[in-house]
Length: 148
Image (cartoon, rainbow, N blue to C red; front, side, top):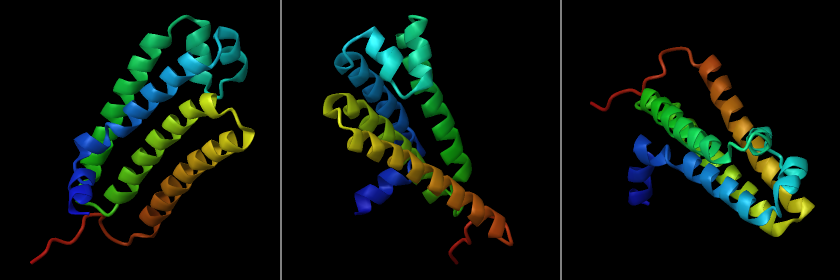
């Protein structure tokens, strides 16, 4: 448990989860979708559909992975030492899990599984909403009190 806490409180590690998830997701999509037409007609992600239509899938995956890492890292660094770090880290983990689960949907090909992936994405939205509501209800600064 101590190792998990150490990893969770290192923004550089947690920020890797969404880019790894998106790389896994879109790689699985490319391998198991059945081709260009299936991606254009069945893929949930408008970004991937547009990238496929423009023949820019690899640059798109690279840009998303770099963007996810940079934004995730910057967000967690700015949230360090605040009560919002844990929801922020949880949100990044959920984003990565949602992408990885979405990639597996091309293997599973079950509507109930696809619905579960959408529910996982909705859980991320709920975490973000809860953090926002926590921020609104906080009377003082978001910084954690330092131990004496």
